[in-house]
Length: 173
Image 1 (cartoon, rainbow, N blue to C red):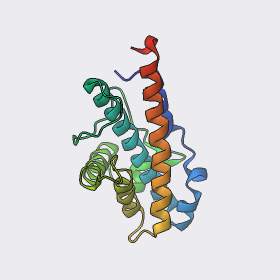
Image 2: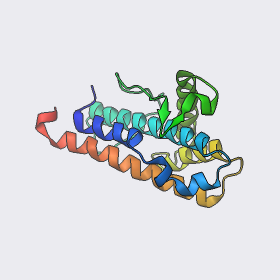
Image 3: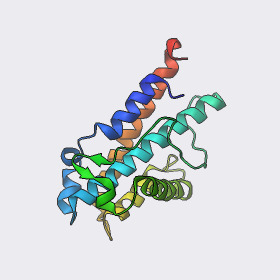
Image 4: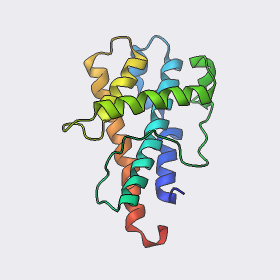
């Protein structure tokens, strides 16, 4: 089970995100902003689940820092991906069912994470941001990749910070 602060932060990081506002720069450059919102949502859902999994791995290994096992990311029990995000029907926008989309994107981001980690990017955030940028644009401009990487780091820090807060709170154990 995912502790409450972590679960709340993880869920908020994809459900309560103001996609149209916080990704306005990206949406303005995309030919179909609804498709972009759907892709951004799928990425943020994956990153939330991935960060929770890293937190659980760290706890199980009783480590001080988040390490990154190369295992498939799965959402925590009870997580459900909404089919509509900011008025965008994710399934209609991307032309597939939500389960198929989640399986496809989780596989994509897990692969980029596993293959793209290195000493300068041990958490693979730049690598997975590149995968997202390529989902959004045929040839993503460097500024888009930099922006998406910064947003991924911001989300990761927020969710992993909640993991640490749960670890520091004896009531959440």
